[in-house]
Image 1 (cartoon, rainbow, N blue to C red):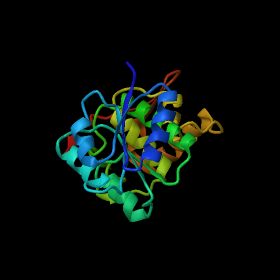
Image 2 (cartoon, helix red, strand yellow; image 1 turned 90 degrees about the vertical axis):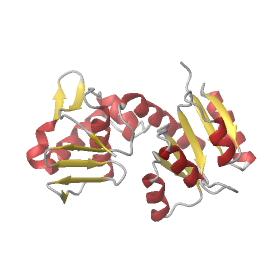
Image 3 (cartoon, rainbow, N blue to C red; image 1 turned 30 degrees about the vertical axis):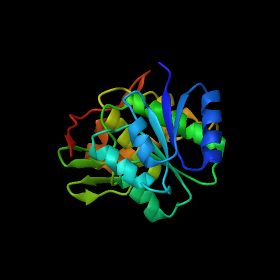
Amino acid sequence: MEERILVVDDEKDISDILQFNLENEGYIVDVATSGEEALNKITDVHHLIILDVMMGGMSGFKMAETLRKADNYVPIIFLTAKNSENDILTGFSLGGDDYIAKPFSVKEVLARVRALLKRSSLIKMPADTKWSYKGLSIDIPANRVTIDNNEISLTKKEFEILSLLAQASPNVLTRSEILGSVWGDNEFVLDRTVDVHITRLRKKLGEYANIIVNRSGFGYFLNIDTKSES
């Protein structure tokens, strides 16, 4: 089935550029010029939204919040000139999955789209969920991992790998799938990079290191009974 993307931006030049390049990649693309129009267009056949934050009327943040409150977990890439740390954190807290600052590279947008669509095809649960196992808690929207209520310090890549494994659990993810989701289309990143990051991640997990299991010849999976908390 062809993947369908909804582009939401009130700047016609930008939406035209995105539509042209995405369609060249084989995606089906719908376009909306406002959050209100997008909410009327969005259906369960859409696989991804590229959403501008600063629009007249309903903002992209407000639209994302509206979707999540309605239990719609379609992946969202925010596209905006607002790229301060607080803005980025706000976007993720509202259920955004990725964030691209304007002006953007079309190549980067396409790489992020491919990676996010790949990730969304692997995961079992929405991204604004918490996973817990005994004393270990993985809080996806807060980008936070705790052991016995004590936060452990993870790099961005370590957290993305751990959260991806949690979301995909109990599926086994190959190194290529992890690379594609976490690093996108970076051709200079090798499969060995995944092993190095997981080795470091296991050390930081301490007594929970063994929940990350390597299935020889296949890849990695998280060996826990996960449960979601709203």
